[in-house]
Amino acid sequence: MPELPEVETTCRGIAPHVEGKRLERWTVREPRLRWPIDPAWPEQVAGQRVEALTRRSKYMILHLEQGQIIAHLGMSGQFRVLPDLQARPEKHDHSDWLFEGGTLIRYRDPRRFGAMLYVPDWTTHPLITVLGPEPLSESFNGDYLHQALQSRRGPIKSALMDASLVVGVGNIYANEALFETGIHPRRAANRISRVRCERLVTHIKDVLTRAIAQGGTTLRDYVSATGESGYFSIDLKVYGRRGQPCLSCGRPLKEIRLSGRSTVYCAHCQR
Image 1: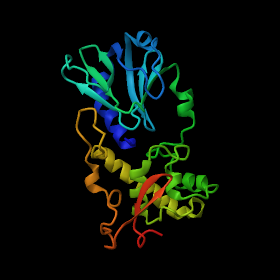
Image 2 (image 1 turned 60 degrees about the vertical axis):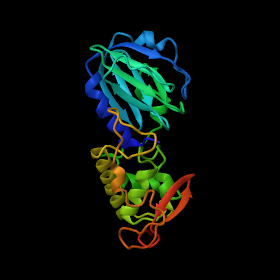
Image 3 (image 1 turned 90 degrees about the horizontal axis):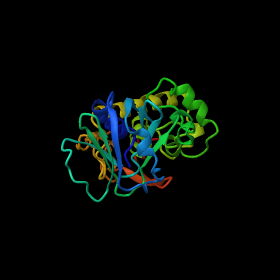
């Protein structure tokens, strides 16, 4: 599943092609995504100028003159900027945005778990109001994290992947940040000291910043807006490295499942 750095990379790739331009046509070939695309939406957005393209958690927000389109990549969604306006859509190319000047943004989603919703005010939408702070924002800090964890007795890894606590950390980056901080992924969230929370926040911010700078993490289904896979996976220290030597102590990395997700860690370095 594309995580926050992948979505941020996609936003940055698309934004220069659409901001300030009018959305001339929204073509929907398959409306049955995670939530159906209302057949009235394409007519309602046609001719509106794009004021900005932003991100909130893993949602992309296309800000129009009246309302916004909330888009989510789901598990396998991709937005592509196509140079050829005559490019024939393939089987899983479900939607196109055509902008003035000929820019075509095509949405591909083989599993159809993504979403495209036209809403009057994205800030009050139920998908948005339940979200916690952005991990790279000033509001996500050691004090906040320590206080938020006091009522959580479950594993810290599961807590970090709860979007009501903090958005967009995701499985890959939770693995990496916990390793960098030396925290065992099974440790009870409410038993992590304030000092360790400070360090954990620092490492979460660092690993996400590096991932964004390097284009996201290479996953089987993820391709950026320009068609290039991310390449942050070359720097991953634990995720996907079960049984390989820990880069700190040399002992074999172990793997367990927490909240149904693969979790790789070093039993020696993480406590």
